[in-house]
Image 1: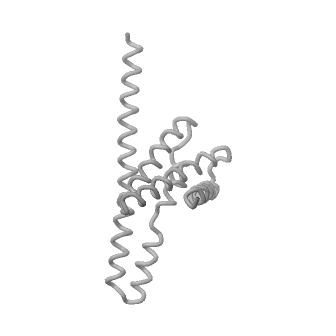
Image 2: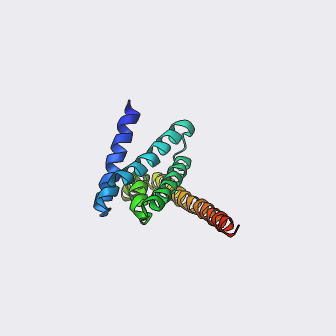
Image 3: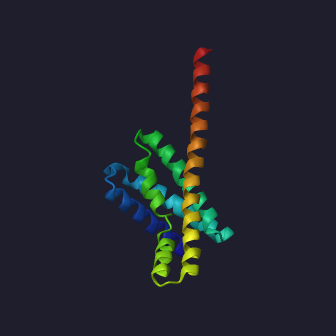
Length: 152
């Protein structure tokens, strides 16, 4: 039951960020769905593996794939869907705890939080890049296939 509540809340949060970033009104639901998909994958992967870094990679990968697909479908920029979806995965709490421990002169704890935030951010970036490369390969394959079928 709590999974459903978290999924609905992630949908609302992603849609709210889409409103903040002036996404077109008709595409708010799609942006919310992208964010919800990323969060559900992140939560599921965290429950299975227990590693938030791998889960962030998987969530960012799914967000980027869904954003690519929706941007092609609606003929709109990908950023309309990807930014609201990625914001849910950003490790803001870890960065806050790192800064709070630096202020409190607890540097060892701060380094631990900062390294986790850094690795999670890197995993998000890698997920976005891997999805971009995969989609470019698929689009290139489809365009070559289409060109080959037109020449026959």
